[in-house]
Image (tube, rainbow, N blue to C red):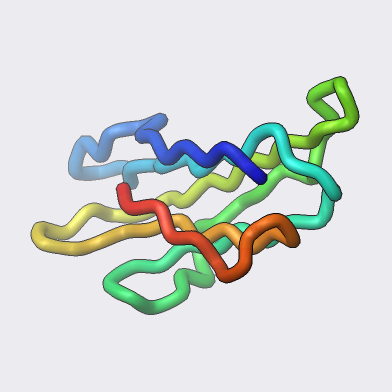
Length: 93
């Protein structure tokens, strides 16, 4: 099943948004779905994702970026759906 990591790749400096990256590694089969939730609601805008890329050894990886303006007290999660999971898995930032 995928190894998933959520990390900050860019801090907000007030005039520019922050960016988070959700990475899933070492999964097979290659089909996977990655979505972002902000306070429990799916985020539509500011999301860019790579295609599934082979990391060698028959496994794949994918990276999804979320550009957003941070607000205090919010909860942001990356949700990964894959055939090896019995249900979608949520990873909090």
